[in-house]
Length: 323
Image (cartoon, rainbow, N blue to C red; front, side):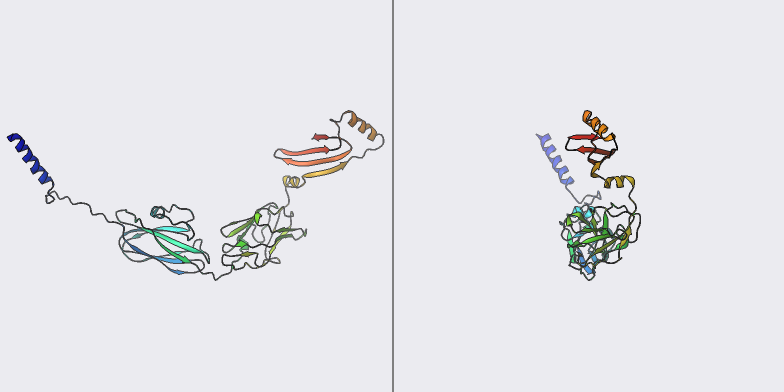
């Protein structure tokens, strides 16, 4: 019994000592620094840029991304990792003190669009704030959109252009096709191609591409025109009319496969025989219709990946021969 009492007393003394935080071991619990508050503001904007400021209340690191305001709001992790689509600008900065940091955004900024800056704070202990702060702005629109002929494709006065190539117009800002004729006129041939079907146009950023125009005349100067208001920007400002010789390029000649491709089609043919040859040949055709073609009929010229195929078609005799 005495042994049990001594054991219980010893355990009580050990437990009491182990819980004594006033021991001389020198251990102190870690004092983790959590993310602190900060101020985020847009301070100025033009048609093509805006400034924002980030003012921290503690040291660490700031992270931000810029998106169109119409984009879904990101999480703190997505801001920290810059891991969402559609980012116009992203970055981070070391916060060595609590001074305000100012940043200018110019990439992908155009008039009359809404933009949002999303930011988070990372503490010196690498904790990221769960709350994402946002500051938004709608840029003014004071400038008319401009057609940039030298950076379009084909560029102004360029030569050696494939007559089958797509045509891409570049503008100073995103614009939208409003309808109306886009014309391509051959200077030497006078051949006019008119594009007014929105389905053959595609838009990407500040460019609009004519994906299908048929085929331009070969070795000719192609003059482009459109009327005022054919293209407008987001606020309804017009791209000026393109007229005269404001934009043109020169096509090259067709190469052999291209020329053959354009020759595809169905043709009528007639063979003229002299003297007794006509009766002789017709007799051969009557006796061997699978080996000889009739003296008149149609042939179809088609192109396949391995070369040219000529289909000779005579509908009356149901005769088809492939050469």
